Each structure stands twice: as C-alpha cells, then as structure tokens.
Image (cartoon, rainbow, N blue to C red; front, side):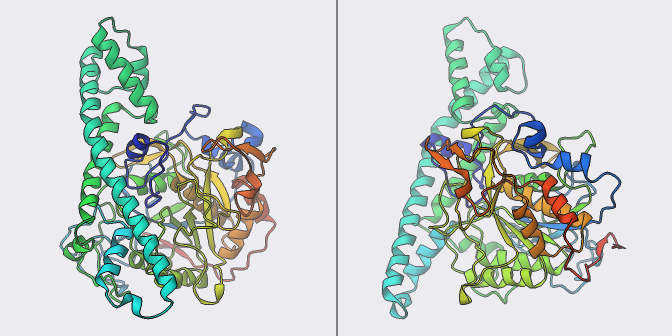
Length: 558
C-alpha cells in the first residue's frame, strides 16, 4: 500500500519490486500460483484463503442479496474496467456533465465519487511529496514552533521527523541511481530476446525454455533469468511491462527527490489551490476518479467487486457490491485533510464500508482524521485499514490512520486493521513484509500474489497489506448483502470472532527465519474467513433498526 514505506529486502529488490507508489511486496514462493487462491478455504482446499467460494457453494445459494456500497479511498479506479462494469456506484442525484452541483453536496458532477487530488482546471496531482518532507519543511519554516508546549516532546518529534526525512531522501537517491543503471540493461535484454525468440513480449517461461549456443546469448539468458528471480517478476508479468513500471517509478523518484531541496507544497498550491492547512476549505478537487495511474485502486476494487463467473479476468468477492471511487492517495504520502474529507464524503453518500489501503508514520492533521473516523462510527460505517508493509510491530510505532481518538484515549468501535497472510504452509503463512501487532492489528487476510484487475482491462498479481484490506472489506460487504441489519460494530465483532485459527500456531517467519507464535501477531490471532463469518452472522440479531436504502441509478432498493 502506498505510504507503506519501502521494505528493504535488499537495496535493488526494494527499488524495483516496490516500483509503484504503494510498494507492493512480491511473493517469494510458487506454492499457490493459481489465480484466485485467496477465495479458497483451508479446510477444503489446504490453502489459507478466506473461504469465499465455499460460502457461495454451501451457504448463499437461493438467498436474497441487497446491494451494498463500498468506498475505495485510493489512487483512483478505472470505472470502465470490464470486470467492474455494473459494480460502480452512480450518484443518482447528479445530472452528468451539466457543471452543476445538483445534489448540493459541494461536489460538482460527482457521478462515481470524487477526486480530492484534482484541480478545477482538470489538472491532477500524480506524484506528491512525503509527509516527512512536508513536516521537516514546516518545522524549519516555523521559527516559533518550539516556543510553547512540552519542549522535550517537541525536540523528540523534531528528531524523529529529521530521521525519516534523511531516510526517505536517501532511499529516493538510491532509487534514482540504481534504476538509472538497471533499466537500460533490462531494456537491452528484452530487445535481444524479442528478436531471437520472435515474440512481442518476454515472460519468465520464454527465457527458461530458450536454448542459446552463442556465449553472448547464453549470458543474456543468465542475466535475464536473474532479473526475473531477483526482482520477483511474477510469471504473468512480461519483462517489458516490468521495465515500464520501473521507468514510472524512476520518474516518480526523481520528482520526489527534487522535493528534498524545494518547497514540498508547491505542487499542491499550483494544481489544487486549496488552503491545505484549513479543513473547512473543502470544495476543491474534480470528478475525474480515474486520473493518473489508477492501477492500485483498480486492483483493490477488483478484489472486492470483480464480476463472478463472467469468464473475464478473475472473480471478486461480492456479486452485489457497488464501488464508490474516491481519489485521495497520490504517489507519495496522502494528506490528512484529503483523507478526512474522503471519509466524510463516503459516509455522506451512502457507503457502508470504507476500504483504506494506505498509511504513513506521521499525521500532523490527525485531529481532522480522528473526527472523520468518529463521524463514520456515529453513522454506522465500518472502516478497514491496511496495516502496512515494513515488517514492523505497530504496537510500538503508529501507522496512521489509527482507531485511537486524541481525546480521552477512546478507540473507534468501527475501525479494523488488517495484516497480510500467504497461502501457507509454515514460513509462508505470515507475509514477510506485513506489519503486525497484538494490540493494533485485528486480524490477517490473504495478501500475497493476489490476482486482480488493472486499468485498460488488464490483470496482474500484486502483494501487500493493500490487497489484504479489501479482502476484509469485501467480506464485510458480503455480510451486509445478506444481513443488512447488522451494524458496523457487529460487522467488526463477527469478522473477528469468526477468524480461522492455524492448526499449529508456531510458524517460521520468512522475513527473519525465526519461529514465532502467529496467535501473538494480532488481536484475534487468526485469518478472516467468509464462510464462518456468514454462519455467525446468520445467528446474530442485527441492531441496525432502519437500514438506509441504497440507490442504484435512481432505483431505490431495500
């Protein structure tokens, strides 16, 4: 997930395998290559999936479902993706393209959601600075910042900001250096193999099957296999496409590196023009929810809502879900103001579940986000957040947003944090990149080598807690489709009480090689399971007295 900051398995692996703004961790094993493993059930398939297919086969046949809106706060969604057709929320209160705010919600022509990273002139922020850059700049510009309050605490905070500022800057400099060296080499190998093999795209199996006799081409084969293996290029990704993604990462790294010595807020002022220090300045952005490179958000949306059984791409979790696309996460760190307003937009426009596959380690506008989290709880909306991808214990370091409110030490009843598991067994249970925490991570969900939709009717395998969170969001929506009277509080309770426990809790953690107790890595010590969650939901009396009706293209359905 974006702002799930770089996971340094090795310098090169970090720089390339996490080329997108969300730094996906690539899978380290071929034990469950089958697309859709995340939908399977351990008890019937011996794979640590989430029990989706079993739930449909054994529990949901003949039952009446109700449509549910899931908001995806992300870097945008390709609303025309073939597997998402019919699963995109449409604001029935707006008249498309008339330039008028017909529903008076402050957002003009918001037909499928809203883009908080856009300007009114149609321009959009694609690459954004890191929060460490912005905080370092702010503290250096504000000469009076240290004058009031707890001076000791402020000094510690300044040192933390400086530490991350230096770390992030070094990482971007290293990324630019190494990718500048590597990309030409990979591009040359790709061109040579295309000519010699007579193929338009080169995949791992093409290289493995190639039997050159010339010493030069033998070396090309050896080096190219090294690229595929060392950088975790999955079997369904061509070398050319990987190079293209690496080039995008390089371009992004160069822009972010420039923020190191410049005003990191300049792009925001130029393109959006809002007062980013004022939460009341809310009527900004545009309605282009597919702007930029919406690969991550489309992949997340596909996990939740891709059409089942249509013979295209892959199967999602929900047959009756509608995706509300909210673009608030750039390539770089999201801003607290945008996230706070995005949550409120989702709540005000009928979302019952909000997926948040993003995060960071500084939150200067935490009070704004806290208020929005409380607003969601007050309006019976479940928030699902990815735990992060740095193999960290987030009991000891906060990965924002968090469910704890500033005032009174209260926690949101309707906020769930998700770590990532793999298909198993043993050292392949806990995703080597996943953050964890006995207090802060609620449960785990499949998040390694998850195959899903991409823009332009493409598909690919990604890994990350960004992929695990929509598994939980999708199952929460599935529960609501069949049991609409369940409250957000009950959804969280059911999801946590119905987790699947491992047959043996002691596992090897691939990130360190050590043996750990999986039960101690989250509150529940288990993996989300749709089959068991639906069984528990069936015996739970819903406490939501008046479920709101969901509008689909002007039609109201209970």
